[in-house]
Image (cartoon, rainbow, N blue to C red):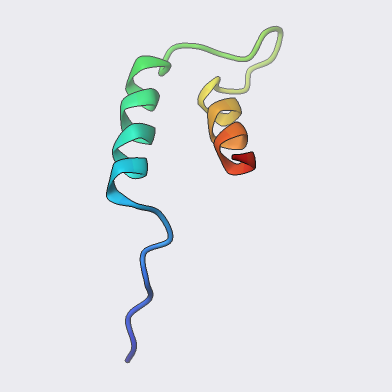
Length: 46
C-alpha cells in the first residue's frame, strides 16, 4: 500500500483550524452557510 502525499502544509491546516475557531458562530449574510466556507473558497483561489 502506498501513502498519499499531504495536500496541504501543516501551517495551512493550522490556519484553517484557527479561522474555524474564530468564526465558528458566524454565518454568511442572510444565509445559513458558515462563514468559514467563504474563507476556504477564497484560500482555494489563492
